[in-house]
Image (cartoon, rainbow, N blue to C red; front, side, top):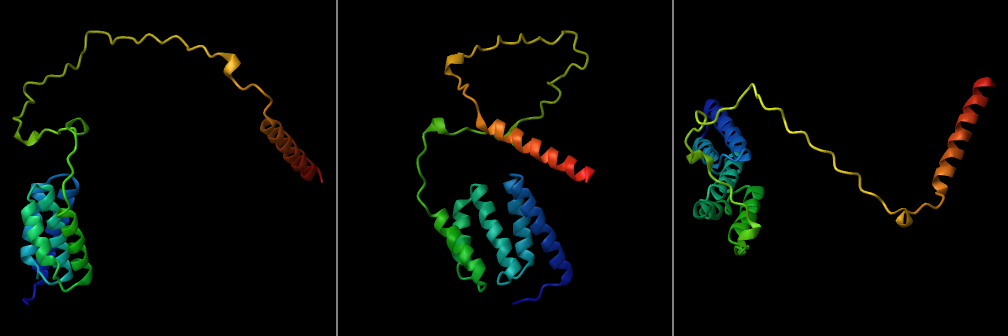
Length: 177
């Protein structure tokens, strides 16, 4: 086991945080890159090294690199820290679970905007809009059939009024006493 200098430990921690932040914002390729660099600076059998590797498993899976995620889970199941090996076993179980087939109408396809060329020059927004905005005509109020409305006396309202009256009366009586 090699010792890690304090400088490289700080660099690894910074890359670990950058990798987590990239993962949480959906930048999975960047997360994989940062977490791999952080893992290279740390001892694999250390607690922090294990945490970085667990995050790397999830980043691999999110980036579509499932085989690498499963292989790393296999290694982490034998990690000396109990919590890391437990998380690796749970992730391994999840990654190896059978994929359910979902109907296409249940899915919303999100296009990869990273491949789209910069269209900023094609999009022009007019600051001085000469057309007046369309006014929405308010919809006619919907009429309610009063025979369907419960119009019986609500005892709660009367009880609330009595309580408020007694409270105000008590406060006035105390203020003059």
